[in-house]
Image (cartoon, rainbow, N blue to C red; front, top):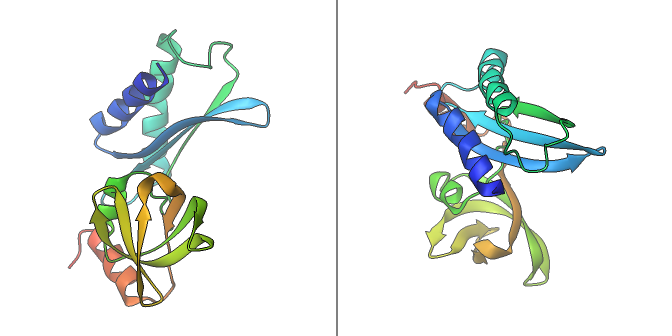
Length: 168
């Protein structure tokens, strides 16, 4: 049920022409929070968040099949993933191959739980990263969280930023 609900939220976002980076429900300060991260090639502004929020609110108001939100005590947060975009799916690691990222693991790998390096690609169900000149094979199932790293003045970051805005 929860997955069906989140897929519906994703469908709403994509029908409006945005990428749904993440949709999830979690408890925060005793209330449930429905967090939706959206993106688009030109970036996200407050108007984009308002538009998506309005459509999701309309759906929430008309639906009685919302897992965990039956008592009406929740809040909705629609925002951009930010410059250090979180990586949620294996496809995210494929998409951002060549970019620097930090991954946090749920269990130790080579005595560590955090790796920072350039994403080399994906092989099967593992993420390949170059960390300080050494290739690491990180099982996706071990990744608790990951995000891109932005370094101010980095030529790769500036090139990616220009490409997002559609400039060459």
